[in-house]
Picture (cartoon, helix red, strand yellow):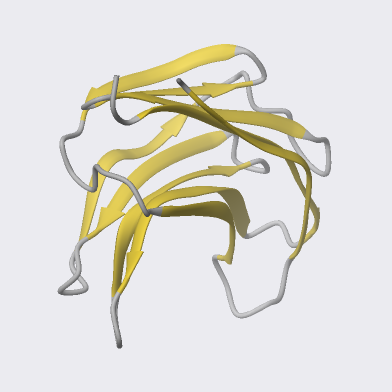
Length: 138
């Protein structure tokens, strides 16, 4: 099946309560712009979100910040997993299924993925990522 893969990472915020960390996927880079998805968690708030960025710079929220008790708070490590089978995305934290959605955007070969971190305030954050792995279906 084309576009069948799984991406996972152990992520934690070492400092910065107003921050989030997660996975980015489906990225395609232009000369001065990009498109792709990001799945992030805010450990201190025990919340998660999913959004996409179109090449014109427009962000679309696919899953708004949602409470997720599976997220370990504070500086604890959280295991994040995104799975894609064609147009279906599945999101997991610490082995708990959080959400699934139909998402036909940004399919095909040659797209990038990686880790993401963001400060939600004017203070810096320190995010750590371990055991990043991408598995593709044959």
